[in-house]
Length: 409
Ligand SMILES: [Zn+2]
Image (cartoon, rainbow, N blue to C red; front, side, top):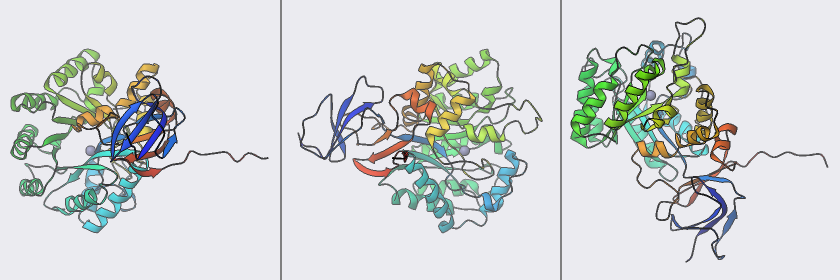
C-alpha cells in the first residue's frame, strides 16, 4: 500500500489506543496500530485527532458590522432593527469581504464544514446570497459550506419576500430556513417553509422559540409538521431558549417530542447569553438551553457560533472549541464523561445535523482532520485546546503552531 502522508501516533477521537493514519488520493486509506515506512510522515505524539469542527449555524452575511451599528440596549429588537438598516447598504463586494474574513477565522480554528444562514428579503434581495455563493466556491478547498436562506424580517408579513425566497431556492440554496416569530401567523410561516423544503428537496433550519416564556412553543408545530411530511432527520431548530426556562418534567416532555419527530436542536450560547434577560436588572437569566441534557434524552443537539461582531453578539473569534468551553462553563458541566461528550456537540453531532454521511476518521472517507493540542476529549473542552493544523481531503489547509516559551539560557 502506498500513501501520500502518514500521521503517526495519533489519539483518534472515540478510538482506543494510538494509531497511524495513512492518507492517499485525498482519502483515509489505512488506520492501524503501526503502518510501514515509505511515505512522508509526521509524528503527532499522542495528540487528539478529530475529523474537524462543524458549524451548523452562523451568519456570515451580517458578521463584522460593529462599526456600522448601534449596540446599546443589547436587545433582539435593537439588533434586528440595526442590521436591517445596515443591510440596505450591502453590496456583493462588501458582504463577500466581511464573510471571507469570518470564514477564514473559522478555517484557522479547525472548522471544515459549515452551514451559514443568509438573509433574503425585498430590500437586500439576493445580494448576500450571491456573495456567499461565490464564497462557497472560492473556499471549497478548505470548507464545505451550505447556504440556508431565510427571511429574518418575516415572510408572510413582508410582501415580495416569498418570491425572493423562491428565486434563491432556484439559484441553488442548499437549505431553507425560517424565523417564525417574525410573522403574526408563526404556524403559517412554518407551513410555507415545509412546502419550500418539499418542493426543492432540502433540509430545514428554523430560528425558533426565542425568549423565556415557555407557555407557547412553536417546536410542537415544527415536530407535528416533521412527522406529517416525513421530514424527520432533516429539520433543525436553533436557539430554543424557552427550553432553558422550563421545569424538568416539561423539558423532558419537549425532549421526547423532539427526539421522536427527528428534530435537532442547535444551542447558540454567545448570542443567547448576550440577548436574553435584558429586562432583568440582577439575577439575569442565562437563557442557554441544556443541549447535553437533550442529547441524553435522545435529541440530536449541537453548539454553534451564530453571530460574530454585530449587534446580536458583539464578540467572536469563530472558534468552536472556545464556544463549547463557554457552553460547558455556563451549563455547569463538571463530570469528565459529560465534558468529553461536549466535544461531540461541535463535531459528530453537528455533522449528523448537516447529514454529512462522509464525516469521520475511517477508511474510505475524505481525509478531513484537525489535530488538537491535547490528548483527550475532556482536555480539549476544559483547556480550549488549540487546533495545530488541519487537512481537507488530504491537503493541509491551515497551521496554528503551539505557543512556546523562550527560556533564558
Ligand atoms: Zn441565527
